Length: 302
Image 1 (cartoon, rainbow, N blue to C red):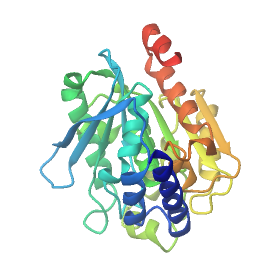
Image 2: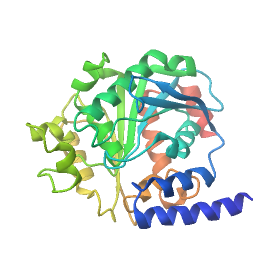
Image 3: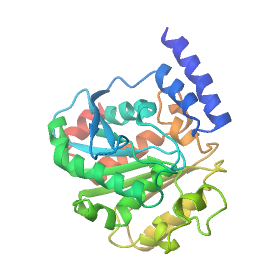
Image 4: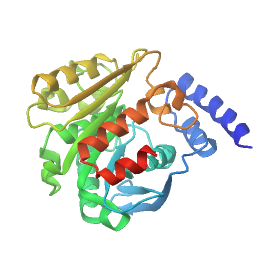
């Protein structure tokens, strides 16, 4: 039966590549029938971090949790127009199996909101984490952010531009590192499509770009893309990595051969993990930057 489910998941993954990950039905199907990591579990569903129906989050915890684990907040993509945390449970379990108490927030989407409202939602989710995550075995002093595509933008922007966290009452130093998978970080001038719809009303266009805020106080970053990505060009990853290195910020840059835009998400799953060592490399970097305890490192190595 597991082999049969894996085959079905493979077909679902191919459908995602064909139609794009913003089509929620193929991703929901893939998430529902694909094999999951045994080392993570859903521990909290639909916790409210605000009054809007989309200001809800799920928490996944390591099965072998020992308390005071690093906390990873993961933001999904979808061009700031689509997405639901329920379709990314495979990501939550995968990251929890790597030793992180993992939080998957929803956030408000276009056309209901535009820049920067979804960033304020992300900051409010992080404020909830600071106040509540200890009850689920997470250490609120060791928070890292990650995301894919538009979610990578959210994660990296929240880490680099401190204004959003401060507005939510969070000390920006609480974020120990960020990770972006196939994210847009340097995309001016805006194109005539989604970018203009979401960011076009901003009076200060450079202030919409994560690369603008890269500097000596930026958190360490894991930045990855696929060399076959034609949706968000790998130059976004290369440019931001170079700017952070100029500022002497620790950066791990990975451009995975043969991967496209969807692949950098699918490579987090059990079914497609052989596409690239992305999950292991990202998790190792984030654990190191979060200052994992030696005991945790030994457990994860076994």
